[in-house]
Image (cartoon, rainbow, N blue to C red; front, side):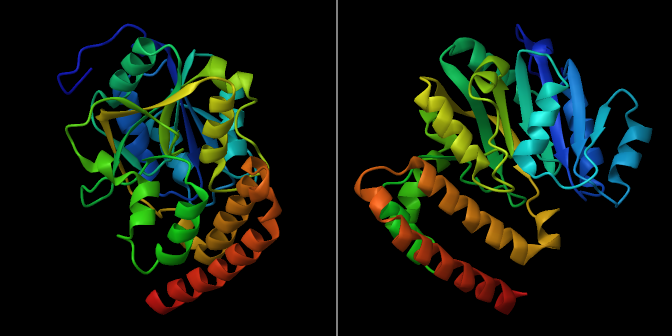
Amino acid sequence: MSGGVGRQPGDDRFAAVVVNYESGSALERCIGDLLGEVPAETVIVDNGSSDGSVDRARLLFGEVGVIATGYNLGYGAAVNRGLAATSAPFVLVCNPDLEMEPGATARLSKALTDHPDWAVAGPRVLDEDGHRYPSARRFPSFGDAVGHAVLGMFVPDNRFTRAYRQTQLDDVSIGETTVDWVSGACFLARREALEQVGGFDETYFMYVEDVDLCWRLRRQGWEVGYVPSSEVTHLQGVSTDRHPYRMIVEHHRSLLRFAARSSSGWRAALLPLIAVGIGLRVGVACAVRYTSS
């Protein structure tokens, strides 16, 4: 394996599942990086793209399998199709707009091998400017959730958002640690654990399906790990920027769905109020997007 990272036991036991939708040339770069990691199986699940990205990937990488869904099933549903088409015990789930540092999957694979109670291991995700994207987080308390919802778009450095986004993980010296959830943009998971919980919940079209998955895994006794020595760069918005307002609505719809699933007691009694607040936040987010475009 390139990049000076030696092959670890089990490196050839992972399947790569890439969900594609109108990602253009980003898909080619992603598949090229992935094949450098030497997966046992690589599958592109295409959600009805019309930009020719899958055709170009087929020409360049004939060994890669393609599942054409025919229309946009959503992210989690597409991942589940890829899981069903592969068999390796470890599964790398990722977006097509990723650039992987050499050896990234070897480090994730080693982490899962070293921590048999981890169902999922997520890498350090960087944006195009090299800053850490908050891909490893905790489930927010009610107060942090409200504070982040109210202030996050306008005062991003508020204490509620910092707590939710786990900004202490910006420290590059931090080692492997457990977190509540990691971003579905890229993670390595045990097939055994995913099958135990039935994979992604397909009622989420886009967003929060990763939070829900990790929440269900943890309820079954699994842990979720963060591996900062494994790095990927996420070129965000390659597909979602085509339909920004729909994505805002879907994001908040998913937030409400997860709030309903995970709330109990007095928090469940507040769900009608939470729904109103989420609806208001949709309007504000759309207005902010409109004025900034």
